[in-house]
View 1 (cartoon, helix red, strand yellow):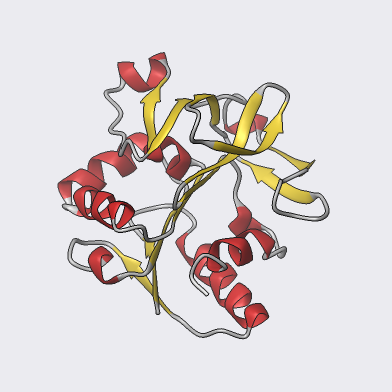
View 2 (spheres, rainbow, N blue to C red):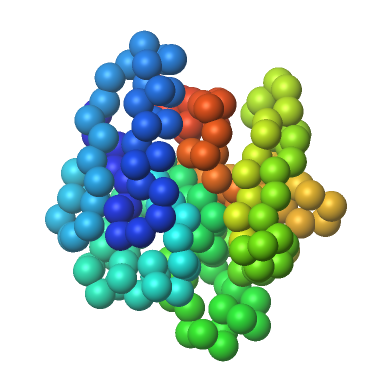
Length: 197
């Protein structure tokens, strides 16, 4: 079993550590690989697209030839999780800011996103969230966070803040507006791993 973490930018080591802790919690083993160039994604059984600056991340995914590989493993039914910028990149459509910057989108979820739904970097916050697949609240860390503002009928909403969706799922793709790798609570990564084991 091999789990890939896109390592072009963002909280890469934090995701690796969270995966290691969640694997230990489940009593499972898997190889975790960090991905900076093409050729590795197709060998992965699951993939995480971490946060970062979404415009830059999108350009680099295309330039390095990784974007098409991500689409291929999605079509093969392998689990993909995108956090923060990852949620933006997974969407089919973006807001005016996304269009203005010619932001590349993978188009793997039937969603429209607001890239800076909660404001700028200084507007970052933590909140206790109710998430559908958890039996108690989750302390979620939002940093210059996006949100899903519209979604198709096949997209399952997992969590909201007011009228904005901050966690959603469609088929084998999980999108989160927050950073589960920045907390000691491994339940979100555990949920993701349950799709493999």
